[in-house]
Length: 426
Image (cartoon, rainbow, N blue to C red; front, top):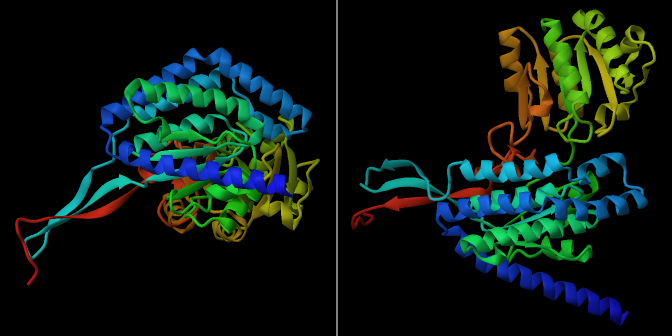
């Protein structure tokens, strides 16, 4: 009893100290010059590349522990740090450094009848807490984006990636030291105790925004218990609709890539919708391709008529985010029925139409209420890097503050600025 109480008090004291130091660091980072922030990002990138062997060794410890614990293949895929992944982390840091610094930018400056000028200045959010599972690359990505936007970051990775995150954190500290930015600008929580998460999401005095990245259970818990604003998405139930005016080659390429390019990501296709006017041409070909790639298909009666070996789709399949080689397929009457299906079962993440009809494409873009809506392109493009944002902190399906991939600008806010010359209100 006392031991538990002592442990709880220790975690509380630890997190309060982390928050206090982050708040102090945020003032220094918020006023740092662009060249200092960019210099730190390049130094961190160099440190990551130089530490490749150490990073892989630390990651191997996590992978072995994950396999022993029975982690699902999708989680192990996210956990693994390959040489390509390490180079990708470094490249992401350099891409963020190459972006324009939004902090201090003044826009919409206009004269008012009183003679004053009123505009908006982009400023950091302050202290950002990021809670994530499995993916150790998030540690580097989050640090890069928060630093570039002038924020301090408190990073809490999953216990399954503790060794990997510690190794990456050491590289981050090297980069900060090389350019004179405060060590506390990026702090990685060094305990697997879940009580640390509970403390972090309630520290409104020290933390301005929480960004959870992980499974639905984690994000639901954070959203329910947090006393700090949350930027989030719960599910990635992404759709591709093949219109009856689609180019068949484009349709097959987009639908196949959207599902099979990678299974364990939130922008992977989970439900394929096909107009009945093109189903007989598209589905037998796509069915053979998916099944050849080992994808299990679950479909409506019409799909099962056209493609042998398809399992019966249940109501739950239309809402499922499989993160696995499983795909729900439905034949719909037309675009109207496709959009109704997306509105009913979708998660407002990413949805695409394949069509050569300009008017239908424009209507789909306008009426489908998702954070990313695409025409003739794979849903796998819904990504900060692909959108030119460099790394991303996550993909938001919220409608307030940030929506879609959240890059540097999404980690800032705006304040009104007024320029006068002794003006007084009359």
